[in-house]
Length: 226
Image 1 (cartoon, rainbow, N blue to C red):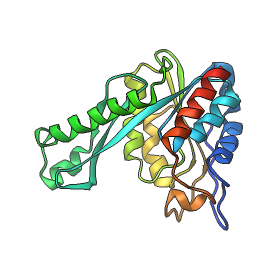
Image 2: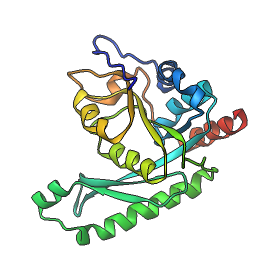
Image 3: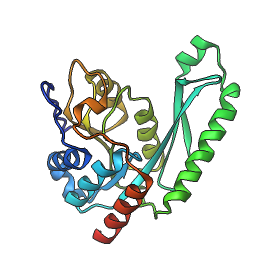
Image 4: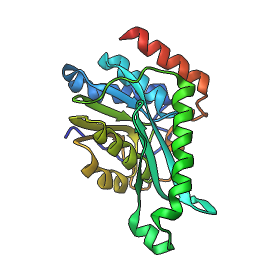
């Protein structure tokens, strides 16, 4: 494991996502000889992952994740569904929380179907050729982690896709989330893991929303560079 964690204090650690990606890429340079594939969680993870892929001279793809909420209270997450590249989207559900709120898998079926359809729509919208991940080392990148629920689904989707080694790489995350996700990956790299974590955005001076046009542009640039 090549994880590095620092306690954050003072002003934001990262100017923007691109700068965070450049710093993350430096920590990931030892992986370059293994010819990894880099997968980003759109949209916020794409500028970060672009810099990682460019430094490692690796193909860049998207890893689509959607939250599955309690019917009628969608902001309460019961799990997530993810698809690596153009693969099938598979749900990862919090069985303990489902029992606590009295929701069965059958009740969640419509929500799972809706989110699976949304992932298919996103895959078509970005119209990118997904890099193959079977038998490869895959680096999964986002701009940060809050609770880890969606990232857990993302990592399992990569495993399901046949990756032989999975590395989770993010600029910032709370220590508890990193501890929970450690079992889902082979290696974990995080630049800043503050014990008083509040939100991903406070660690960036510029955390404006990433637009679809920027995602498409970065994917196109990455394709021409590899």
